Amino acid sequence: MAEEAARRAVAELPLLRTAAGPRDREGWAPRLKEEYRALIQYVENNKRADNDWFRLESNAEGTRWFGKCWYVHELLKYEFAIEFEIPVTYPSTAPEIAIPELD
Image (cartoon, rainbow, N blue to C red; front, side, top):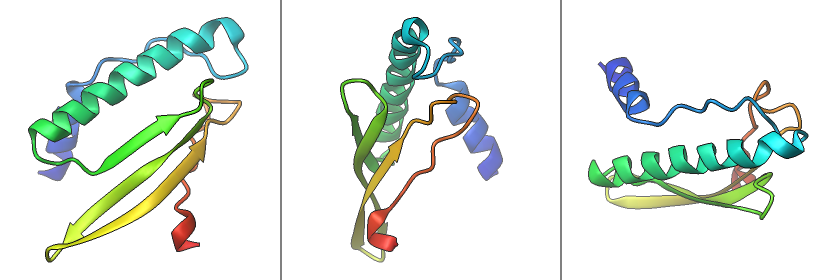
């Protein structure tokens, strides 16, 4: 059931068609626009479903991301800072998300 919900959520997002990373000077800007479109759509879908759980922003180049995520359990809200850098080999290599408060 959860897998089906995940498939539906992904199906609602725009496809990322540009295979470029930060090293590709010409291809990175279009890829970053695609990433932003997908992220904005994901956040809007979550808000519509009352499932808002994170905020993200990036540096001007789109290579360093940071923000907050949260989880509510038994009416208590747990909030954490998150950060990650886009690897130079992206999109072949996934970013590693860090939660510094949990280290």
